Amino acid sequence: MMTITLTVMIMGLLFVYLSPTMMVTIPAGHLGVRWYRFHGGTDQGPAVQEGTRLKFPWDELYDYDARVQLVDKEYDLITKDGLLITTHISFLYRIEPETLGILHKEVGPDFLNVVLIPELGAVARTVVAEYGAEEFYSTRRIEARDRILAEMRQRLIEDNAYSPDNVVLIEFDRVMLRSIKLPDRIANAIEAKVEQYQRQLEYDFRLQVETKEKERKRIEGEGVQALFDNIGAKEVPNYLRLVGINATLELARSNNAKIIVTGSSLNALPLLIGNDALPPPAQQPQAVKIETTKGANQSPPQLLKAPSDNTKATSTQAEKPATQTDKTQTDKAKK
Image 1 (cartoon, one colour):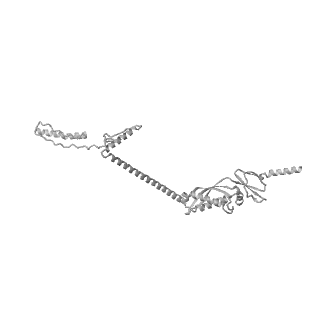
Image 2: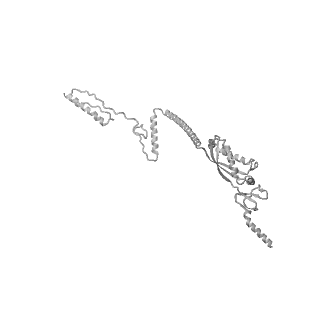
């Protein structure tokens, strides 16, 4: 009994002492790969699922993050026309649980820097070299992105140094071109070209609008011409007077305060101040021919009056020479 008790105590102490190396906890979203020191090395079967696992102290259990990972990386790419551009590329990936053992054995935990980043850079350089700087910067960016994703997936499943043919070690999900930085002079030239193109489209639109406006005015003119042909030249003043009356009525029906000003003649339209006909020019007083007689009792001759539109000043000036003529004729008659 003493021997058995001593053995159990020793085993318990050893278990407590070695428990940190014998019990391994795999957190949520992670997978594990076993490595046996005396039984064939790496287990290339399915990965160990999350939870607490037991192992021998001389064995190893490697932990891998199985969640979707996002990686941002900048690459220097050369376009078809020989320009060096800096492209910020982001991609999503995750490890494959069924082939995690092969990935651990052939590549190792640092597979991101060993496989993914270099492979993506090589694929991006190959694809971008087929496009010009302007194409990759503006019109064909999505096409280039899709080609990079397809080429990257193809390289990950083909036969290479770290995986057999048609064996998926890493699921490459998506590629995103976050930014493309061109040389300053090239970027300015492309922006100026796009600006000129948009301005050309604006001018084309303006020409279309003016063409439609021209057509509208032509149709409107034909309508007005047809209207006056039906009315007749003699009835045009009456028609215009009717239009003026209708316009005055429309203004009078509005609810806001208003002052409607019309001309003083029948032909004047609303909103016109004064007559629509100009007054005749002021007439200057004309000389008057006076016939005199020898009779002393003859009444003085009557003077012609100036037009009624003359001012008072003109009338006064015209009366002075007439008075002087009257006195002269009276003196002659007396003599």
